[in-house]
Image (cartoon, rainbow, N blue to C red; front, top):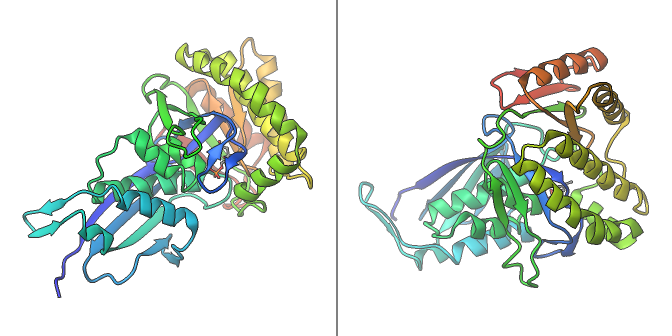
Length: 354
Ligand code: PMV
């Protein structure tokens, strides 16, 4: 029997939405009910590293997440694998004497090993980095000749927010009109150098896994919240245009206003769900009050906050000086209870504070 292994390793950072995606119009294709905008974090922190391998000696597709084997039978993994396999091209490694044809990819099996350097499923968008990295590394291994926009439509079928992690900088996920999802893709608004004075700091309030997954939370909100329709039809389209302008012009006051309002409205639709969903906790609320008070005491806002489907605060400071002050204030008001309670990752800087 032939014995060789061909591997590819890739690293993908997570992204944090500043205009949130919440609610699907098609659950299996993962088509959203509104556009969203996110910022991709620095790849040196909060990222997924994935190694994909192919060998004629592998007898089935298998995957390990943080060293533990997980089933690949779920629809989301299967959709991503099928879409990538159908686009595979010939691969030749002359040095190793390997030649894989398009036809061979249908029969060859894959082993996938993925690591997150941050808590999984704690509302830190681990699935975003994970599926983006999976799709990207498989596309490289199988010599898929699609651009990042097309790859984003595949990553989207793993986890909606994953489509935005294929680019750096600020990224927009266009909801699209097509029933099949061909136009529901991510595009880069500006690259990571455009607004590089921003510093993103994540206060890990709790690294426990969230109680309501985003999938079931979204379903319950769409089914029961009267507010979500208003949000998707009236509020978000206007905010998307304003946010694009604010980002283009590096208009921090408008950016803060939109980011904080959108996070608060996302949590309001969660509260408007029956039964209500609580993602934030007391500490999250206290962080909001603290930032609001600070912003109001200054001539111009200093920090934006946003919370995903969990209690952890993502704080975006206007520059490094403000970030240093923010860290001091956080440590003063929220002294770490234990290592696991409050870790602050300073993203875009080399230091990780524990
Ligand atoms: O892509 P999912 O299923 O992990 O959902 C992400 C939802 C939010 O993080 C709350 C918002 C967003 O746009 O990322």
